[in-house]
Image (cartoon, rainbow, N blue to C red; front, side, top):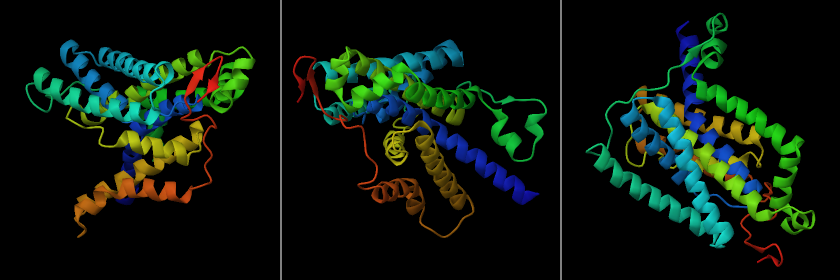
Length: 312
């Protein structure tokens, strides 16, 4: 029975650790399917985490915090779209700049708002237990005793599969990311589609930041995204820009992080620095294994000049 409980706890921890990655990866999926490289996922996660903490701190309401996170993430996405689509700044440079600015501003304002690097304990989003189903061994605690954001994530994954591959909007989005000039010939505004996609990307990624603060940790600390945005990008590549594939990759990285935490707790004589780097090493090896095999959208990272002149 103890072994069963240990296994169940491990699966639950793996799921919880993968949820912020999955939200960010899903956000990056929309942006990159439209042809806009989104290295700014790290900054979007951190912005969502900080904004949800501040809004919850002042309002005392976690849903106000989540709404504020989504709005802030959307604004960061709008900035990224403006720089990349309108001003045609290099997409990699824009993403890295947003990451650096987000890290600096959240650290600065956290010290002003909370009078220190960390917030006090915040109210959190509690899990919902589904009567009857919650008592099923292993599956009950894994699937039917989760918070509403986990259920929202599952709905968003299913909806993304449907929208991307079974609706005209999904076809439009994929056409813009693959052949922008052909999309223009069909009467599609490449600029507007990319704006919508990148703003949506910011909203989804910021949900991951809100989850970090209001479910996992329940306080804000400087740099708490800790590279999760970059792991989400690795998961997106590993999942070949597909909602289900990317989510499964996030679960793999979440399970790896949960494993290294448990190895540390067991007191195994391995330097903890090696254990901490384990999820990032797995992400690196996964990308090395996919070298030359994972084909991104053809127009990903390519600056679109105008609807009259095409690509640069």
